[in-house]
Amino acid sequence: MRFSDTTIGTLFLILGISLAWYSSGLPAIPGQSYGAATFPFLIAVGLIGCSTRLLYAGIRHGREPWVFLKEEIKNPRALAGVAGMVGLIIFYIFFAAVLGFIPTAFIVTFVMFLILSVHPAKAALIAIIAAFACDFIFRTMLHVPLPSGMVPRLPW
Image (cartoon, rainbow, N blue to C red; front, side, top):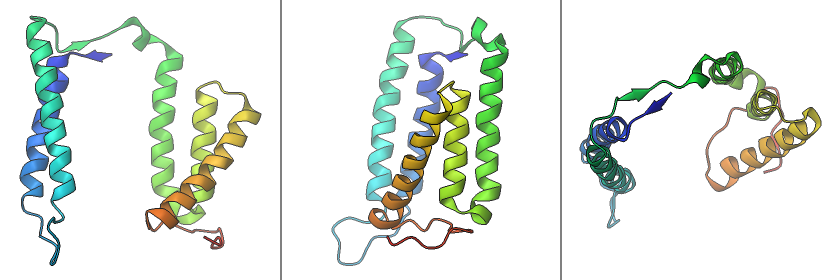
């Protein structure tokens, strides 16, 4: 399935305008020259600019269907891959708090690699490295509280 430039441009234009409108109501930070709305507003400006370019390209190409359906969409392996990805997202939502971030991230990454036909040993190694690297980056550098679950608190 492929969407035309006009379709994607329209959706992102609506998203960008909505984000700009929402971010205008965010409060200012006392003592700062910028507030909580700065970053979302910059993202909104980027979305509006890119969507305008996509709309221009779509209109210039003339009349296209909004959605193109390709033959690959009938491929059972591709459909299974999409269903697997959706299932992994649902798995993360329900089991991250119980198992913890590291085991859940490992399982999700490992299964994603298997869906993409990566050799199991290589998939396991990359999934372990990615789970610990993401945990380290999000906990220490970005200060994002990740669920610990059954994993004891790591030194970082």
